[in-house]
Image (cartoon, rainbow, N blue to C red; front, side, top):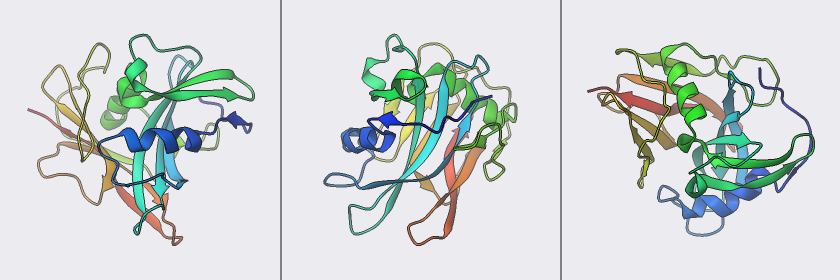
Length: 211
């Protein structure tokens, strides 16, 4: 069970993302983001070592508000071989130094997300300890999925992030969440967040395509 600590972070997650998002090919803005944490969910690490969060951050810097999906993992020490995926480091008021990573590069998050697709993991509330998030829905129609461990090739493009799995399945993170799953998808994870106008928005965060 992930315990949510109500404490300080220096710098904050949004401060880290403000510097990091413009370096991504799927970021559509032209200047410095103006970010609000609008929603998301967490997954529990069975070993209790790694924090796993799927954050929706809304950028209000342009003429239109744009929601971005940012999966993050938080670790007490650097993840070997993942220097390219480091979003930044923070000082946590309870846990001390934390290394924040673009979570799709972290095998603990990948394994948890694939378990969520299959219904073997429960999405948890983003800001409340030990509370399921029932707004997160999942479906998958296919054979058993691999664990997400090992070395994989993660590819970012202007639409999002792709991850080929050893069995030929392709996991896709929709960094700008989609209204519906892509044609041909055999699995999806969907969630919700608060729009700037106060309405509640639902969209597809991630999808699978099996061979």
